[in-house]
Length: 160
Image (cartoon, rainbow, N blue to C red; front, side, top):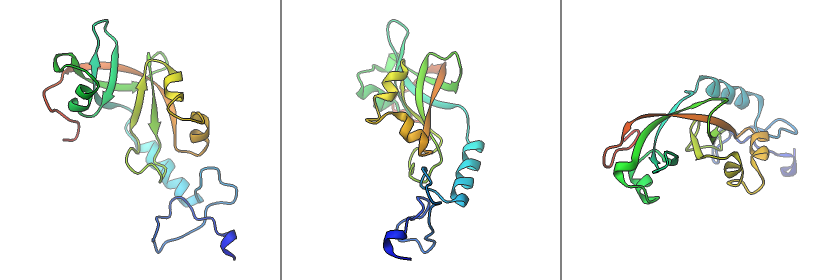
């Protein structure tokens, strides 16, 4: 095998002694074993997420983040910031990107981000559109509904 024949699986970390090849023509860049591991993790992942956001004067929810401080950095005042639970819903009025458990998603596996009131706004976060990332197995657009859980507290953070 020459170096030009070597196509490492995206599940192989740089410097790992467990270097293995991706499946030929694999659009997601994985081998069968890593693909099965990713699918199992995605199936077991939670299907709701708790974040903070700003509730605007007209009742819209904007600027979704896991920390109150980041919502404040977007211009939200503490009295307008609420804790919400987001869940997938066909009739939801929000859209976001759900990261898969693909090995390249090192930080946000199973999480949602880029949450907006229009699907096109999520699409705009990807210069080549979300279809290419979905084809690579890295995530998908999800339609969401938000349930307000209560007011946020100063410096509150999810997991912190």
